[in-house]
Length: 268
Image (cartoon, rainbow, N blue to C red):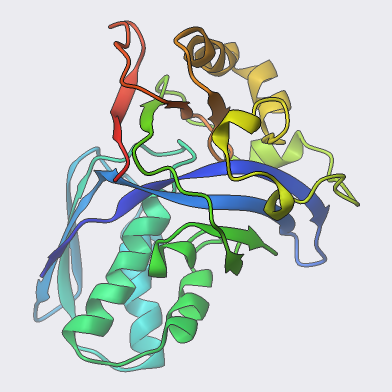
C-alpha cells in the first residue's frame, strides 16, 4: 500500500488566546499543496517497524508520528502490526505540516486497507492526539480552522490555476519558540472567514501573527517574503510558524537560482 502525504500552507494565522490546557486557540485557513509530498509505503509484518529514506528522521521510534499513528489506531481498534517506510521530502520545521500529513495518511491508509469503516469524525479525533494540524489532513480540503486548528468550517478560497512558489531557507523554526514570541488577540479585529476570497485583496489585510517575532530572529525569512513581492507576487506570507514562505502569482515566473525553492507550480 503506497500513498503520498502532501504539504499545506496557512493563509493567514491569528493567535486568539492561550487555553487552560497550554495550547492556543487560533484562526487560519489550511490549504493543501498536493504538488509537494512524501511517499509512504505500508505493508503487513510480523512486528511494527519504521524505516526512512530521503530527509533523515532522527526522532526515536517511540516519538515517530507514523508509529504513534499506528499505536493510536490500534488502541481504538485492534489491527495487525505493519512495516512502515517513509521517503521524506517535505522539510521539517517548515510550517508545511509534513509530519502531521504523514501521520494522518497512516490513519486513513490503514482504515481503508483493513476496511475499518471509521468515520471522518473518529479519524479526526484520533489525529488530534498526534498534532493540532493533523486532523486537517484526514480530508485534505481547504478549510477555515479554529480552536487548536481542529474545528473546521467551509472555505470557498480557490487557488486553482494560480502559480505558487514555495521557498525555504533551510532554517528550522521551533513551534514553541514561535508561540513564545506572540501576543494573542483577545478579540480579533477581523475574522478570516469574513475576508475576500480574491488573493489580490489579501496583501496588508491577511496576516500571520508569527511573522513579527520569527522575522526578528531570522531576517532571511523576512527577506524571502520581500523577494516574492519583488518577483510580482499578488500575495506572499510565511506558512504556519515558519520557515517556508510562499508567493501566489497570476502567471508563471522565472525564479532566480539563489532563491531556495522547494516547489513551484500551478495548483489544479
